[in-house]
Length: 364
Image 1 (tube, helix red, strand yellow):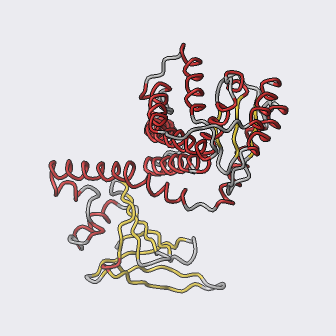
Image 2 (spheres, one colour):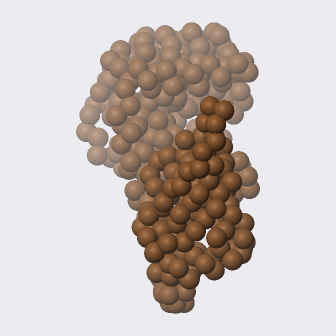
Image 3 (spheres, one colour):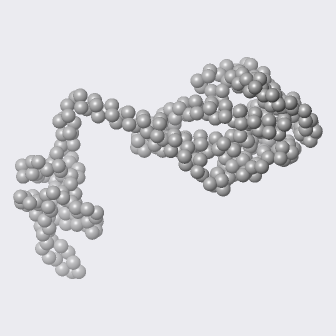
């Protein structure tokens, strides 16, 4: 007979108990307290329903019994562990934590390790991305807009908005007569870096540094066509979904969402995302080209835009494998290929766009 602590699963109170062994299972006797009364109680644990809890160097044994809410038994006596092994040698709750690994041998351990690693990599690289993109593709438009507005609000808290150029950029956009599920809003920010990007739901951010570098109105049309294509094709939502899904997956896997492993996981995921981002940029370039075609704006403006960017980047060396955008030279080449195939004659002057662009260059 052994002494221990019994939990009936109905409350957090533990009862001092005596434990006996029988062929059918464990007999647990304890004093049950009621409303000012005490009574002797005995429960029988069917050996087939006992589950292993925790063994601490076999000196403290915790057993779990039944379905939810589980009953528990704690016994702090090294002899109890030996008695379990003696009375019930073939039962699963008696097995050592590493018995399975010992039974399959070294080759088996290697095989299991390889299989688990392969499964994790398969999930990360081939299952997780399409699942994340499926979720992004089926996100309701109003939810996408709310997401973009929330990000926009946070960004604008510290931004220095160029009010004059913002008004004129939105006038320019309206002059393009675009039918869109989004209420497209363009914000021009004082920033010397020649850059622009699109947020979910139709928010487009343009740095005035890129406006200063452009010379012709069709370059700005190309820029807006490219960024609107990102929004229309839900590129930012897709990228965010991939990043979030991958981060959660790795954090759960490593059980360390805030420590060193999480930092390493985030950096590793950023590297994995690069090739995906380059493909999205190419899609936006080609879609932007078609956007200009549909409005009879000479797509040569996109070629001029990339030529301008190449001039800005002439003092920068960005290796292909660490660039989230295709190299500007590559973009020039595939836009040139599109222009060679293009048989459209672009004759419309677009005086309204030219006039607004002239005002923008005056206010830059």
